[in-house]
Amino acid sequence: MSPAGIVNWRQYAGKTWLEIPWYFAETYFYRRLLNEVRYFQPGEWQGVNPFQKQKQIQMDADVQRLASDWEKLSALEPETRFEALLHSSLWGNRADLSNVTVWVKARGELATATERHLF
Image (cartoon, rainbow, N blue to C red):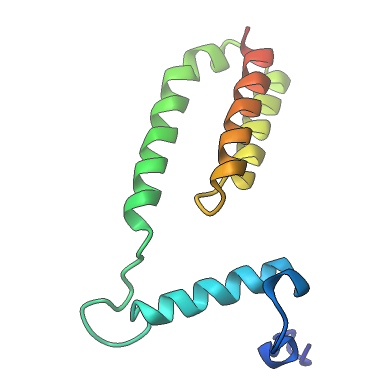
């Protein structure tokens, strides 16, 4: 790493993504992807997030689910409600759009964890 904490990608040249730190591999991949869709270049595609539609659909569904469960959640004791929301948030971090297998597994485990607190 450089003194400013910036990673020089050249140190990973010739290695597979399995041989380098995961966070670096993921952020480097998405940076290159955004470059290819001209996210950083002046023009009509500058600043256009290629994943915005998927993110918006997921966020709308999550807000709907939270709204439909809010009555049950609000009836819980504050500590139990906090724990249920915390677990929900943590599972959401694991289940992003980049890994469908993790998403499916997390949805099942989230449902089990939420049911434990709601019923």
